[in-house]
Length: 216
Picture 1 (cartoon, rainbow, N blue to C red):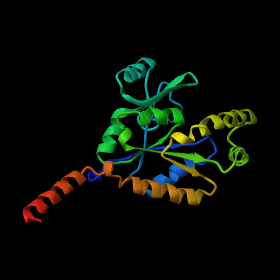
Picture 2 (tube, rainbow, N blue to C red; picture 1 turned 45 degrees about the vertical axis):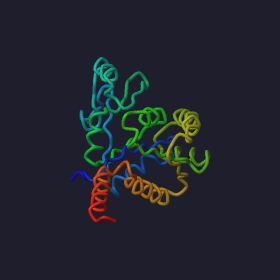
Picture 3 (cartoon, rainbow, N blue to C red; picture 1 turned 120 degrees about the vertical axis):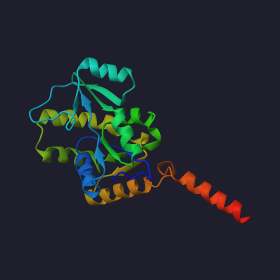
């Protein structure tokens, strides 16, 4: 059920590859299944097994560019010949109904979102590795990429890390369980931020009326 007593959060998680972002995002969903992942839009062709509207919103180049021109994307980027972006409408509806939306995006997308009309409800968190050597070890341990791909990811990592100062919170992920607990604490506290509680104004007005009626 939507929690209409509060506004949802637009939760941004960013980090260089290998810093634990995807694992922590899954743990957040396990902790609170009401947190939903944002479904991105893309102009690339669907891969086998991918479902439109669940894995991605698949769009033509023309439709995507039109959506950007109409201000319908919270953030967008051109990556390896294809466009990717976050449709604004579903995110706005979720926030109004009290649902938190989780984004796994880079610093460029994060900047676009924190400058959008939904900036008031954003919570941006950057994950740092304990060391560059540990970051490389984690990438190698995953066994998903070859040497060339790992080298490219490592080269890109410093560009990502250099933007840590533009985030609301920064966590050094030296222990996954500890980082998870800190992440949950941050989200729990931010849900109580004044801007996330639309009913507070009516409550304060009620207190004021009661105070005036009592003659205190």
